Length: 202
Length: 200
Image 1: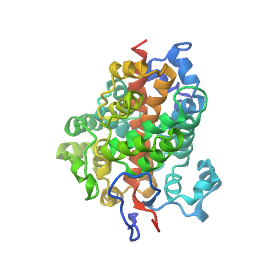
Image 2 (image 1 turned 60 degrees about the horizontal axis):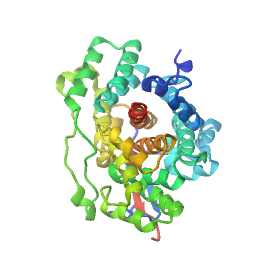
Image 3 (image 1 turned 45 degrees about the vertical axis):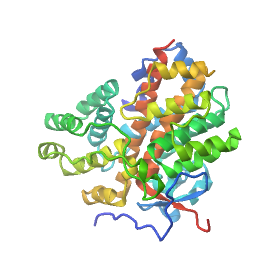
Image 4 (image 1 turned 135 degrees about the horizontal axis):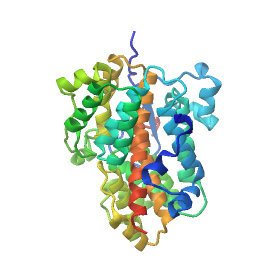
């Protein structure tokens, strides 16, 4: 008997990019908590993620999930110099906006707004899209993230030059590259294994 | 053996020990280590299960080929040969790249204000000859992979059901999805760092 996809419960689908909290409903069966081995649990890295259907679905390949999560955390949370956290989140939000991942964009737009205090600019990115003028430094980061995300990539020396003129050193430019590249990973999982929903009660 | 393979991103970028990029990658040591650990988990797993190494490298070569990332595609193509793939399979992967290559991202949003951003593009269905070379399971996987690479916002439960109907399990689909998604990362890190290295 082959496996079947899930039919999500009745819900309201978001139709615009937003900084509001969204839910995510899986199209494939996550592991049930009581069928998770010690290896599955460890692959979550953060024990609280056992509540997330997304992470319990990815835990079906625990080695890939654990390595994915540890890569993610260092790219975004490593405090050692480079690109400020707010701008790593900006690159993640811009990549998600470009690829069309409403769920990922909502999470990282919230983070970008929290760390930068530039809620208006983040909202303009969400509303108008990746070509909006956010001031030279932010626009340079968004343009580089978008160029790298195109398939095939259109990222070139002109993007590096523009980021340098905007004041980024090479570690910060490498952070832009990694943040954008990582969301090309994350967006594809979030978009293809389930769907966003307006949070219950919202 | 692959478990002790040299760092794939370093190798594909051409990062020499002691170089500027070596120093930059060393500032994000966990990301460097675990990008490689992800590669090992997906391409040198302890238990490949129903997604054979040959399947994994066939998908890898297809994804890299679709990205037009020649250096990366050459590496996954070599590994596909080493995994024992027949000439027919290798030819089918090359044919699939030629049939399926386009530009992304495109796709549709849920009906509403974002509909004005909808952009149409091809849905890949493997040609008859390519399908024979790939076999039905891998052909179903490649059709899904193309959507993930170029128009992931068109994803829908029906696409996943096609994979399940072709004989992949839910866990296999998670692994295949991780392979495509991870390569979408690895290829862009390689592309980005190569550009940076070329601009000292």
